[in-house]
Every structure is written in structure tokens, then in C-alpha cells.
Image 1 (tube, protein in one colour):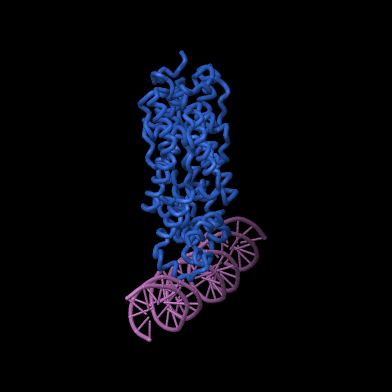
Image 2: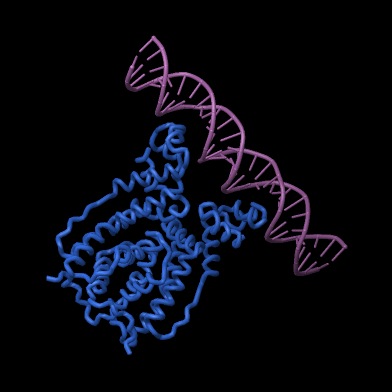
Length: 187
Length: 187
DNA sequence: TACGCTATGAGACGGAGCGTCTCATAGCAA
DNA sequence: TTGCTATGAGACGCTCCGTCTCATAGCGTA
């Protein structure tokens, strides 16, 4: 039934996911679906969690900060360009306000997406390549944010040059020894 | 009826917006709503367009690039922190894949959000404060993206220090004379 | 005033989906 | 065999949806 739910999520959208639909696609009785998930929100949460578990990825690091960041964001972008993961993210964003369970799932997904990037930046900071004082959420906001903007708000697909310019902009900021951005007007 | 639709959007969410609900809240006959919008998508599109028309804002510029960018993003963040605008954005993101009309509305909203920021950056570039060669969408991605990440993906409210660090990171990147980010590993 | 046009309100109608219920039965373990 | 559990099938009442008809209020014009 969870597989059927994932299929429905990818084809007709989360709003069409009901116990009846899932039972039809899965070829089981309608009452069975209601016995497992009396609430529609519990069904959706289980489907999303099951879908997320199959979407995890691991990116090998070679030690070069820029290369590793691009590789990590490339894997993230590939997932976001993919229809199913995109639908999952959209659904989680949409529903996390109304459903606490999905809100927790959204935060968990966000943490997973941050983890690889943060490890690279943290190690680079330990090697004194980057200046200290930049937190995990700020790193994620500056690296994932621009890509999320293109994918969600433009909207368009994320291309490699978007990733490169995002990483370069971040590294330019993070490599600057002294953060003195106050004198921003050239006079 | 459009006012009733906005009220519904802010209270029960876009998925509950139907001709019947709108007619009930507006105190008109159900058939009247169907006469005006035979399609549910047309009703939703009209409601969102009407809501957006009332949400426009204008930010005065003082001439200092950093100050103006922060002011512009502060207005944008205030809108995104607001429940109704947040719901509108979420709905547009969610629906733009399925509904062409809402997709166009989403792109239009995105353009409106970019416009003020781009004007500041373009003028600063003309004054040689910032290096040339940075396009409008890249500017928007690097300035709006990190804030959208915090608001949509974390999710949390956008605070002033988030805006300041985002602007400072962008200015550090855009003020750099020669973009030579290739030697990012310190060896 | 009388007439005609238009938009509206009220409500009926069939259809579809939802949530709950009952009942028979297949699977399985003691 | 016996008993327990999960399941499939389907009935029932309910709500909502989309369409339809009909009477009427509003309004401009002759």
C-alpha cells in the first residue's frame, strides 16, 4: 500500500491520496486501508516517510572543498530536479503548518540535506581554509537557498552553473579573513 | 466573493476553496459562484490574483546599497512572515505545476519580488560599486534564496540578522574585483 | 406605468467519494 | 479441530459537487 501511495504521489499529487485510492491501486480492500490509517494525515505521513527512506543518497568526498561542495549540491539538485522528491518537498512544506507529524518530517528532511554540506564546511574551517563563526543554518541557507529559489520560486531546473556560482559566492564570503561588510558604499 | 475567498485562503487553506464555500461565506447563492467560475482553478486563480493585488508594497531607497538592500529584503521578509502571503506563495508553488494560469501568476510574483532588488544592484553596478557580469536571476537567487530557505525549508521566521548576513555575503561576493574562486583549497 | 433583459436566490437531482459498519472467510498457530 | 486475527466484499448514510430549473428582484427604456 505504501508503494501504491508513492505511485499516487508521483502521478496525481498528494491531494488525491486517500485510503480509497491507495486501496484501489494496491489491490486491497478499502476497509483494510482504513484499519491501518484511520486518519488521512497518518496515511500521508507514512507514505512520505517511506518515500524519503528510499531517496537517501551518499556523496563521496575527495578533500577539495569546492569540488566536494559542488558534488554534494549536485546530488541535492538531482533530487530536487526529480519529480518525486520535488513533490515530497512541496508536500512537506505545504502540510507542515497544519500537521505536526509532517512538520517534524520536514525538519528531519531539512537536517538530512544540511548534514553533508555542513561536514564539508566544518572540516574546511578546521583546516583554516574558511574563517570561523559561520553557523550550520547560515551555511545551508547560503548554499541550498539559492538553488531552492531557482527550483521553487522561479521555477526552473537547477543546472551545474547555478551550483558553481552559488558555491563560489559562498566561498568568497567564507574565505574573507575579516568580515567587514559595513563600508559597502564605494565612496 | 473574492474577499470571501481570501478569507477562506487565510483560514482553512486553498484546498478548501470551492464555489460552495465561497458562496456560503459571501452570502450569495451557490449557483452564482458557478456562473462566474465554472472551473475551480479559475476561482482559485482569481482569488490569488485579487489577494496579490492588495499585497503590493513599495520601499523607498536612500542611495546606500547595503541599506537599501536590507530595507527591500526586510519588506519582502515581512510579507513572507505574514500568514496570508506565505499561504499565497505556497499555493502558487504547489499549483504552478498543474495549472498554467497559476504558473504564470507564480512567475509574475517572482518577477515583482526581484524587481526592487535588481534596481538597487543595477544602479550600484552602474556606479562601479559592484563588479559587472552578475545577472538578475543570480542576484535574486543569492539574496532571496537564503531567506526563502529559512522560511520554507527550515522552517522558521525571517529575522533581521538573517537579512543582514545574506546581504553582507552577497556584497562580499559582488564587490570582489576579480572572480577567481578556483583556488579554493588553501594548499 | 408596462415591458424586456439580466443577474440572482433557492432548491431539486444524480453522481461520486468518504467513513463506518457487518459478515463471511482465508491464513495461521496451538 | 479450534480459536484468533487480518482481510475482502459490500451495504448504509452522509457530505459535497456540478448541473439544472424556476421564480423574482433590479434596472433601463419606451
